[in-house]
Image (cartoon, rainbow, N blue to C red):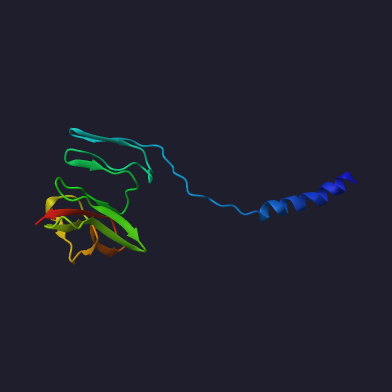
Amino acid sequence: MKRLTLRLAFPLLTAAAHAQSYSITSRIIAGGGGTSSGGAYAVTGAIAQPEASPPSTGGGYGISGGFFGQYMALQQTGAPHLTIRSVGGNVQVVWGSNVPGWVLQANNTDLAPENWLDVAGTPTVMGAEQFLQFAAGGGRVFFRLRKL
């Protein structure tokens, strides 16, 4: 009798276990990391810091936390701060609207000076920001501002 009860109960327990759903919630993963250096400069950090503190700046240099992916804004000494954001399948490259005299450049090969090209288009101005918008996709692209 006891064996029969267990044999009947076991399939019911396993069926209940398979029927349960699960979910994965967003979490921050911070680990690994290390130091990158070259010449007189070194940067130390950890991977995956989407909620990191504001940019750290000093002199003509700055570094921002977060994910670095397909699109990267390179900050030039004396140039307005560039920000890249994703908006519904598009990429916006944003800088301040109160700083005339700068043109957006892009580079998709390497950072050699001869590989930078002016980006066509007139920036859209919205309040304190101006931006150019592109369809997301393709390979890696670097952006910077060049003084006219």
